[in-house]
Image (cartoon, rainbow, N blue to C red):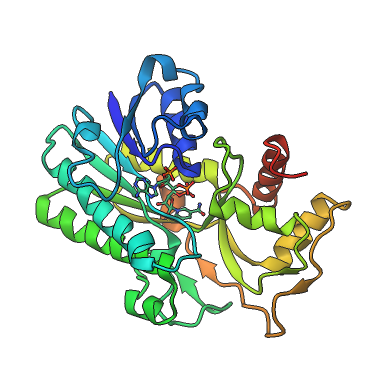
Length: 318
Ligand code: NDP
């Protein structure tokens, strides 16, 4: 059967396309720049690509752009969304493509009765950030929602983008009777297939590239393989529904540096945090729904190791 993947050039989507081809699917995959080999070569080189992968140009901001992508598909994996933090124009750079893009794709889906389910790559960014203090006593689960107004006030624009896009997706899916499932991962680590450095792997790259300090921040982390498993299980398991948080565990960057030091004793790593404030506490995130779906979580240390090894292989790291 044929499935569609949006944003196929990206870190998560490239792995997803690889896995879908391995599982025998025909894949229609959207890219923004079909003529840029840096965005397409690694996809066209995948096993099965010649026979079963079709790249289609589409842009999140163009209405109707995804009509031809989803045509004839039984499932849609919508991963495309801008993921970066540094912006002077959050509305144009992050919020519009995230929100309008999601509605654009769902509009195309609503016109295409062959589609049985849409799996949306949302984020932990749309779950945990509503002003409730995050610390060792906190247990986040899928009933939580980030508060877009709280995130706006704190200029957490990427978090706003993921929150408003997922909110709008659920509203639209309900109105139009679309079977929607969301995957909500924290910072995704693991091997990179694409030549460019995506934001979550760049975070590890920064730590091993001579940074003086590590961020005084605690993130959730998860392995890309597990995130792909969750997407495919969410599509293939008829009873899958709702949101699936994907967080192996949270860790402060001081711990990430300690793990790097254990794995790579010869690396020059930052010794101190970016500020003198107390360390941002770790917090707990439910794995229950993901585990019930069938996901097995790779430990953080292994995810960090795979990321560094991949960065070395891809010459991202001197
Ligand atoms: P990447 O930056 O590698 O991929 C983002 C993708 O979105 C790229 O394919 C990019 O296309 C596409 N895109 C961005 N803007 C547009 C646009 N205007 N029109 C069409 N396509 C566009 O990031 P990831 O693979 O990490 O992220 C993929 C998804 O996963 C995103 O939805 C992100 O929010 C989500 N996510 C990621 C996490 C992580 O830690 N990596 C954690 C939680 C969620 P192009 O290649 O042309 O730039």
